[in-house]
Every structure is written in structure tokens, then in C-alpha cells.
Length: 123
Image (tube, rainbow, N blue to C red; front, side):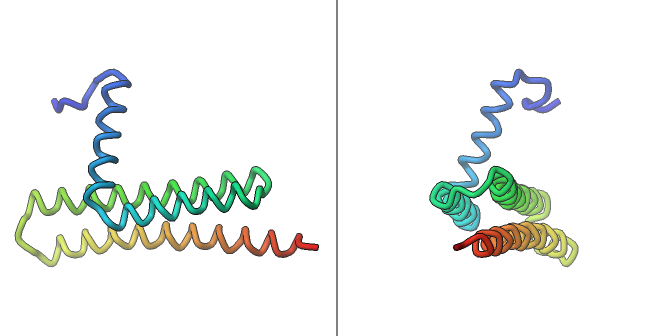
């Protein structure tokens, strides 16, 4: 059994925050995605769209950061278990990176839809 199993919520939260902090320190792409999420929040604060847009933008931003964290975890695990390059692991890593790309494209779609919505309501 790992040290993470069956722990109290506070301990599990600590593990998660440790992972997030480590990933933010070591992964430039995650820092970029987190910065983009913060910028999206500032845009929401400035434009004050209806609540549904807040939900969509924040959900899309969270999905991108989560995808980036999953990608980081998969890459680290793959490197740990199989330090030498192999075509199979390359495909695993490429698919994980593609997951991030799909999340980013979805978030950009939400941003575009919000922009169209705001421009259609402009006086």
C-alpha cells in the first residue's frame, strides 16, 4: 500500500499541493498554462460577462491545467520506468501531449465564443 492510500483528506490535499508546486517549479509549459488561466480570470473581472461565461472559462482553464498535470505525470512515470527511448513510449508521450493540445483548443473555442457573444451585444 502506498503512503497516499486511505489517508485523511488533509494529508491527501497536501500530497496534491506538493505535486502542483513541484510541477509549477519544473514545467515551463504548466507555468505558461497557469499564466494564461490567470489572464483569463483578469479578462473575466474586467468584462464581467454573465455567470455562465465565468463557469465555461474557468472550467476550460482548469481542464487545460489538469491536462498539463496529467501529461507531466505520464512523462515522468514513463521516464522512470523506461529511461531509454522506445517507439511505444514515444507514442504514449505524444498522445499525452495531444490531450493537452485538445484541451487548449477547447479553451480557445470557449474564448472565441465569449468574444463573439460580447461583440454581438456591443452597442
